[in-house]
Every structure is written in C-alpha cells, then in structure tokens.
Length: 588
Image (cartoon, rainbow, N blue to C red):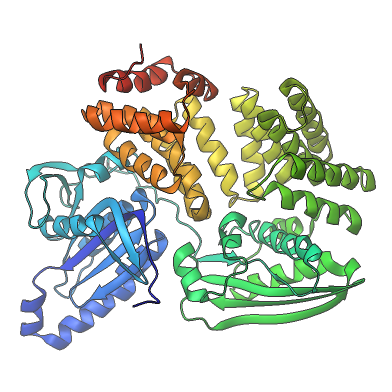
C-alpha cells in the first residue's frame, strides 16, 4: 500500500451497465460473452477512444470511464447508445449509462469518491438504451452538442446524502432531422496522440540543458504540424523532466497512445541523439534509432526523427506538412541556439526580472546573427509583452507594448504565415483591444499547427471578451486536452465562460477546482463567491470572499473585470450582482 499514488481532480465520469446481464448469462453464456466482446471491440472502446476517455475498469456487466471534458463524456455516451440502437443484431446487449461531473480520488489506476458514486446511481436511473445525467452535466453542455435532455425531477438515491436533479436522453426520443438533411459528424481527435518527454542531457554539463530541451521542443513543434497526430503541449510533457516513471503511467495521465523519450550528448561540434517511440498501452517499442552527426546537421536530425515517427505510426503526410516540417526558420546554428536559450526562459515557471533580461539579450543576439529570423522576432516580441505586464525593465508599460508591437510586425513581414509570428501577434493584439485581428492571426497560426494549446486558450479568452461563450468553452476544453498540466490556469477561464452563460452550478464546481489547484488565487475566489451568491449560498460566499481578502487586501473586482475587456456590459453586472446577492459590500 505504501507505493500507491493518491490524488484528486475534477473529472467527468461515465458509468455503464448491461441491462439484465445475469439473465442473459443464464440463458446463453457463450452467446452473451461473444456479443459483449463484439460490442466492446466495435462500439464501446472506439467511442471512448474517439472522445479522449480513459477506461478505468471493465466489470463483467459494466464499465467506468473517466474524461477531462464533460462534452466528451456526454458525446461518448450518446454515440454509444445511438450506435447500439442502429444495430440489426446487438446480441441482446443493451446498456444503461450515467454521466456525472465531480471530484474523484485517484489511487493508482482506479478512481473513487462522490463523483464516481453519483455516476453509478445515475446509471441505475437510466432507461435501457438511454443516458441519465446530473444537473451540473446538463447545465455544462447546454445546447452545445445539440442534445435535448428531458427533466427527470428531483430523486433520492441510496448512499447519497442529498437529492439529485436528473435529466434523461434516449435515442428513440430524439427528434428526427428534417427530411433530406444529413447530421454532421462532430470532428474527433486523430487516432494517435503523442507526448514528447524532454530528452535527457547526457553531456555532463548542466549548461547544455537548454540544448537538449530545445531539441525536444523543436520536435514537439514539428510533430504538431502533422494533422494526423494530437501532440501534447510542452508544459505537460516537461512536467516529467527528471522523473523516473513508467511510460504507461505517462500515457494514462496525459491521455496519449505513444510517448517519445531519448537523450542528447553534445561534445564540441558533435552531437549524439537517441530516440525511441513507446506504445503507452503496453510499454513496447514501436521505433528506435541513434544519430551521430555534426552540430551543423542538427536540423536534419530533428526532421528525420519527426518523419520516422510519422512513418512508424503509418500516418499520412501531405506535401505541405512535409514542407512545413523542413522549414526551420534559419540556417544559422548560433542564431538558433540563442533562440533556444530565449525560448527556455519564456517557458520557465519562475520567470523574473533577471531571467527576462537574459532572455532579451539572447533574443537580440539571435536577431543580430540572422536578421531574417522571424521566429526570433516573434519570441522577443512576447518577451516585451511580458514586460508590459510585469514592468521588469522599469520602463513605462506603453513603451514595452510599443517595442512588442514593432518586433511582432517585423516578424510578420519576414514570415506572414509563420506560427510564432502569428501567435505572438494574437497575444499582443488581444491586449491592444484588437480582438478580431487577434483571432485572424490565430487562424493563420493554427492552420499549420492545430495543437498549440496556448493558442486555443488565447482564442477562448478572446471569445469570452466577445461574448461567444459556447465557442470559448469548446476551445478552452481543447486547451486542457492538449496541456492538462496547465489546467489550473485554463480552469479559471472555463469557469468564467460557464458563469457568464448563467451556468452557476457548473461555474462553482470549476472554481472550487481552481481554488484547490491554486491555493492563493484571489480572482478564483472572487468569481466563486459571486457564483455562490447566485446559487443562494450567501454564508459560504462570504467565507470565500474573506479568504480572498486575506490573500489580497487591496483586491478590486471592478479593476480586474475591466482587464477582461468584456464587450457586453451585462456580463460585468452579472458578476457584481452575484456578490450583492451574497450580501457582500459591493454596490452595483
């Protein structure tokens, strides 16, 4: 028991059970087992995989599946039941499915807790062939999936100390589409998802850490240009840096099918890179190779690794994608090394004024060595955007923004379709209030690299400001899928989007998770207090607000709301009204 890993998180849980399993087995055990295995192989498992679920356990007559996205869980449940309803011969197999959103306790590969218990009770309430969901699930998905739930009222269930408001869905009750129309299929992630772990620095020199990390990041960038792969963001894959961990565990935690690991050894102008691709389901090797090259060949090696992975997974690669992989932005190795050093500071969680100055110096040297290096201009522009927010240079914020703007425009001149140029412009334009221009830049960047988690986050953040709340929720959920280790940041904005839709129960659940993950968050507590006010939980709202004031006695909710540049004045009022309902000293 001492080696078991225990933690908790907010998850969507799907519980499924076979109707009349004991009776079916008693009538014809062989036929029932054959039908059950076929159902799992052809229907259940593919639906779970397409919707990014993790099968926690399979019992003889049911299953428990975890999702990080409520939308994915509901989509999976309805897909399973629609598919089963359309089968000519289901072998007598019919399912009841329950879906809940709540806290779960993770212990090794298993999950427990209230979120799981409620999902199991919901499954028991579902009609044969149907789905039963909790009120928070129904509120969370709203009308985004085009699924109409029927109100099942308040129910009391065994071992749950509160009444549950439940909602039902059944494929027989779904209204038929207008004659002649074809139901559009919801796009799913590619079949393969990969995490690139940071390559081990085997050079014996800690100063070379930037080099091994930089090569890992370049491979992530190249792989993200392949539409047939889902690539986990650098933040999440680098969370395993320096840790000895079973790669199957990495696969489960990040929701990937494959993991790339390896090492880099640099000696003078020679580089040795080893890489191996691991099947995360069973830990087996899919592909491995070693490269001994001159430093000047480093770009070619990175391309080869990417192309070999694509080949090993039998993923098709378009001519445009192949060209994008080969485009490294510079042929100057020294300039690229400076760029890698600067990029390392950007992703460093403990960024401060000293680190910022070093990063800027590396960026300026990269540009001096290659004045046509669009990536370096874009990254340096982001550094000055950080200065705009943090005042590390001591210069006025307007001056920092002007530097960022000048650099990013030069980056766009050099690479109008460049990923980093457009991502940088989107981030800068967002804080200049040019929301439509920021979204256009994101469209350009993500046409080449659709797995840029920060891009999906920025898009969601902008859409909240514009009042496009359903779009924001979808894109923030996508960011969490691609960068689960950064979900503590994404969770705040996902909660805000639900809040502004009036989904206060969902918002409160996400905000409690935010407070759990970020102990000293002031803004998370402020929005949570408002959500609780709308839910009629005034005493709890006041307690949360007092916690927030102890963390930040000078907190000003209006100033923080103004930073969001919400275009609909009613949205700001909604936050203030929740605080007023809680009896807090905020005048509306």
